[in-house]
Length: 440
Figure 1 (cartoon, rainbow, N blue to C red):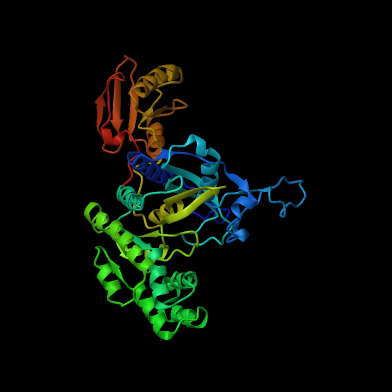
Figure 2: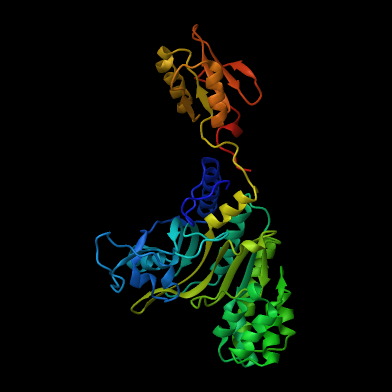
């Protein structure tokens, strides 16, 4: 990230940076498919009415129009770029329900566009990687557990260091607030959602002055938000606060199932964090947020939850549970912090030199023989001095240089070590680690 983008909020990676991004996407794709998720891709545009049906981020949506078209901002059928992958997926499920086998498991990796103010970790154009399971009418709670384990596997496979998948349950929180006697649990959740940004005192003030809580109720709500455990001991800590409610019992049971499974299968990676609120109203049960340990200021790199109505049509209802990884946010931070680097910026393993201009076709024969065995290579464009050709390969980051001699013999040089050996284009192979760009 050594250069400044010419258009703020629209990142463009250099080849070595793009290699890191590709590695992340390939790794996520591999793990998601190991867990049985099918890939889909939805169109980049939706109608404005579809995107704004929640009415929450209308000022952040990029509308589309022809340059010569009249202003159509009030036309519900006007088009706009999607700002996330959940709304398009909901439409996709409704439109294709007759062709899908439910519960339907999908992963989706695409760019999205959001007209917010660019800042560290926030972009106007960025890539998301989503996984969801959606049911027809009902969806077993076991998928809430499985999604947490899938994401833990996926993030553990990335070169990003330690992370924490922080999990809460909206039923737990809502039941607790109702048990306290607070009539508007959604307002309490919205206030608690600001806890990390504004602190305890400011949240307590909002709860008392805007939500109508007493000082004692506000203190109890904050005490709940302080509970964090990597095992099911959070249940006893909540019970010790002395609040009872049927919905609280349900939430405690559901969150216990997630944490109990995670403590066995992804120990230390998943924790119960009762401060996680996720301010969006459509979450109805489990909610997830993920932070990089040591880089908490970046915010959540992966979040989501359970929604009892991802989409609906007539009497049909499609509940779901899903998580979304902010790939561009993740990449920007690991590049800026130099957490990982690519071994080279180009896929070429071998640079085939030219002894003279007449040897171009012979060099192409060498390149073809190498490519047939999966070795990426490129041929010099002109027969400059070998020293210049080697320097060019070095600038490109290509590890091997190939020479064809007048007597028909061949040699290959590892320009990193200087070692030069005889080679046959029909059988020579580099070390397996050199075949692909390595990210570490």
